[in-house]
Image (cartoon, rainbow, N blue to C red; front, side, top):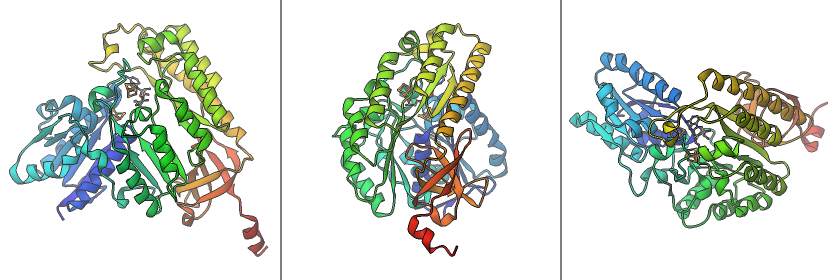
Length: 447
Ligand code: SAH
Ligand code: SF4
Ligand code: F3S
């Protein structure tokens, strides 16, 4: 046993998967995961830089680790992920208690970097971008796949889009896809060990180019025995092809949910954001997707208070939200990111106006989400059970194909199975239901 490791994860699902991979690599190398900071011999912060708040939070948490290092000088502190990529050696210059900085293409080097530090006191700072990203091919150990019936698979990384507000292309690099043969082999392996849901990840999955198209990849995964559900994120509206939309008509295992960020409802703002589609094109996509799959549920990301967003432009965002009626909306106040295109545009939306718009928009979305949830009362969707409800040990929770969270009375033995649930109550962000006992089961009951 080499020691205990704790990883703190910030940011998106990509970082979450990267952390599971790092835990797996370290476990194979003799490290044991712990939740206790005091016990830890290695602490990794897997960081996010997408908005200033995330950036500041991660930096302040790195700072807070200093006393642990003073108490246990052998403690190794590593910074990985997007801030590591962005700031590199600066992190150690500012915070000398940090031992290792590993960028987004170098995460696979974690064990080697830790050994180097322990054995030769070598500080490692590696933020090289490579032609390929070796960590794409790492399959996490079962112990770090929770829930065990869902496998997240990174099919591509990076982004070529350069939306003017966004730092991701700078911190994740250009788009690099993983070869389809490796992905399909991984899927078959997961299916053989009982995985039911495949969740494909990438900054822009629609432009996947690992030897076959993204829609062909979906079609091939759909043919793997044992896989019940397929999901993916994130899609860019400009790359949402008719071929991909057709998959929603043809592939039953493909879930009835798409996350399709629109960012703004105003063509003028979309242009300033360099999104390369119009409001009309976006609404056209939603219509086509609904035609292909009538019960389709949508989620999206939106930014308010982008420089140049007039009150009228903001109203166009509100009208788009009312028109589409998203099930879930992730809304953000524009945050300037250094080095991005938008950082050079004069920000003419005062901070208090940004906050006002955000809270108004969120209020509108809250009522839409609740109305959609209410409309589901009385329906009987299939729910894939993920775990015991955090707030009620007598209940379990799971997701419908539309990605709605459902809580219902049931025992932990239901985890990983798909059961039919009758929806009885709508909550602001979830549904409550009762398990429908199949007719045969009902007869067997003693009453
Ligand atoms: N690749 C994904 C995720 C990008 S980051 C995509 O293209 O959708 C997730 C979300 O954060 C974005 O969709 C955007 O809404 C938001 N975001 C990114 N940069 C931002 C910034 N500078 N300020 C506010 N929100 C931002
Ligand atoms: Fe950022 Fe745009 Fe790329 Fe998404 S598509 S990661 S928002 S640059
Ligand atoms: Fe954040 Fe990097 Fe993801 S900046 S949102 S962790 S790609």
